[in-house]
Length: 200
Ligand code: ZN
Image (cartoon, rainbow, N blue to C red; front, top):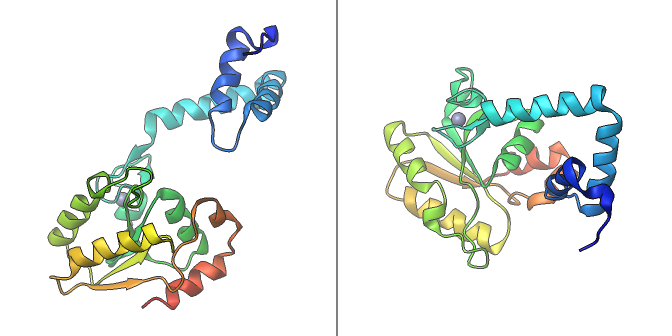
């Protein structure tokens, strides 16, 4: 514990909450907090309003587990998208990475993670039952597995493929799998698109 009095009270609370954000440690949280309180009108208040708006409006799509402020999400509601093509991703950040390429016009299913003995993530923690009921209600032509190219990602892909093996639905996997977590933002869109086109 340090007893820096500048971090007591409201400022202290702000720093504590900022330090809990991914990618921000205590030091960058202190810098961010100072920046915010010095720029109340043009940065802090609009940010506070955006946080409140997100807290009130952002919800999980009951159909695909994407995040949006309308329900079902914009992607599920988009009649120009191919509902016969379902891309299974681990998380919403992967969905965003694929959307950024602008080259995929199907819909998604967000699993909410991948199987991991290390992190204690089992089949019951993933939205597999939802996927199952979704495809039995409205069977797609193809399910594309865009999961990480790790041992856990591959194991998760196998579980989904097993689930679909009794159906006529075609399953495919991205040529190189999805990059893991933080690597996504460094990847150029062409790489993801190429992996999509080379799926098999
Ligand atoms: Zn949706």
